[in-house]
Image (tube, rainbow, N blue to C red; front, side, top):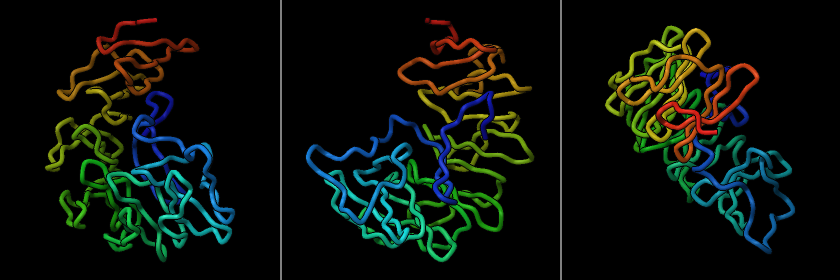
Length: 246
């Protein structure tokens, strides 16, 4: 989904694809003051570790995954081969080579039946079956058929999908709202998404209108009205009108 031209935030945790997310949506794995993890577990990755819905994945000495709260208390005992962070009160887990979902109480609410999955966001999650991606809801009902070569979690009502080597966006009804014509894309953030053609990138709105020509070598996600871009060895910040602001 991304190359130098468009920088996407995509996580893969030990074989579980967990999709796109914004760093602003999560809090780093730092426990409340005075609290420590039990001696038999550690955070999965101190750098990439994130609290989601108040819980963070940990791994024990037997390489089993569970979850702790911000006081370091084990809420879901280590028992999974792999687990993602929580998003939308659901976490992906790996059981017997398949992926499913648990809730924040540790109940398996969607059986481990999929080849791969992405994070739940906005009530839906991308899942893969027979080498094609579609979307399910929290009742495990397929709401968008298995028809895409790639699919990513919803952001601001739209999801990135790919077929035949080209990317575009669909809505929650499965309708293509931005045609699959782009070389690379990133999820929408603050109403804009970075897109790439011929190894140059810019940003589009939800009506597929670009804010500038395809002039940048790298385009980063908008945050608080600004985004970093790169041209050659130079990096600078632009606003939502494409104007340089630094």
